[in-house]
Length: 102
Image (cartoon, rainbow, N blue to C red; front, side, top):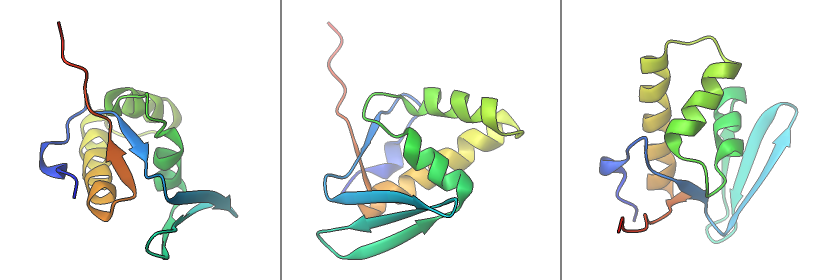
């Protein structure tokens, strides 16, 4: 299980290896092959999942969303962190370990 309690804006996430994700009629549909679970996402949540690429920090993801949606930055940060913590708990995404700073 992932440790979502310490999720920060610096974290980088990647979709789970067994996740198959598609957009259907403007909404996202994710299927976890290992568990046969299906998860549906609304338009905004779908955009968040699309931006998860294993390279982009949550902070940069939030910056991109601020360009696309009219929302208060602090509210967006809070909502995105909460949503991503939920995805971590579900096993839909995984955290990329940070390289130690030398």
